[in-house]
Amino acid sequence: MNEFKLSILDLLKEDARLSAATIATMLGAKQEDVSAAIAEMEQDHVIVKYATVVNWSKVDDEKVTALIEVECTPERGRGFENIAERIYLYPEVKSVYLMSGAYDLLVEIEGKNLKEVASFVSNKLSTIESVISTKSFFILKKYKQDGIIFEEFEDDHRLLVSP
Image 1 (cartoon, one colour):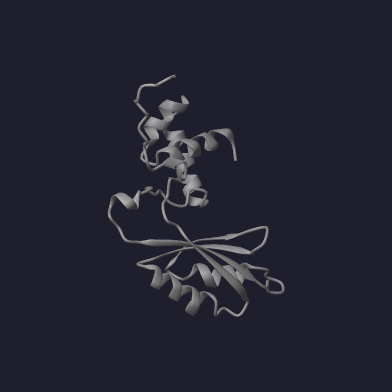
Image 2 (cartoon, helix red, strand yellow):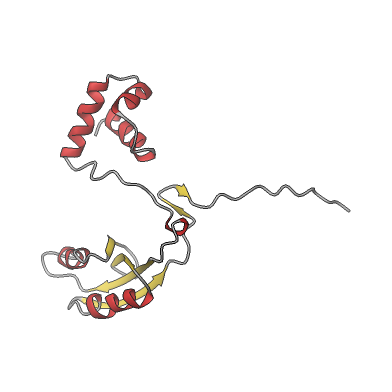
C-alpha cells in the first residue's frame, strides 16, 4: 500500500463524509487520482464500509452489549476459522477476534436485554461442539470508541483555595 492511499485512509477514518475533492485539496492531489484510489480500495475490500459512530446512551436505547471470552479447541487443518465463522454468522454477533492469551476468541454481542444475551450464550454459543468455556462481561458505559470520546467533561472552574 503506497503513502497516497494510506493518507486517504487516515482522512476517511477521521471523517468518512469527506468528498474526493476535499481530500484532494488536503493532500495537494488531483480529484481524479483520489477518486480512482478510493474506488480501487473499495473494490479490493480495503475500504469495507463507511460507518457512523453513535453514542447510543444519548438516544435512550436499551441495548445491552457484552464481551464474551471463548475458550475452544481448534479444528485440525482449519484452526479457529470454522468456529469463528459459525459464531460470526449469528445476527447478534457484532465482532469476533482471535486472541492471544488465556482465551481464544473474543465475541462482542448485542441484545435487547441481559436475558437475551444470556440466552444466546447458553443456547447458541456454549452448545458449539468445540467451545470449552465462556466468560461474559457486560459493558456498563462507553467512554471512548474508535478514538471518539463520548462524554465531554467541563473544566473545573472553582477557585483554588490555599491555606
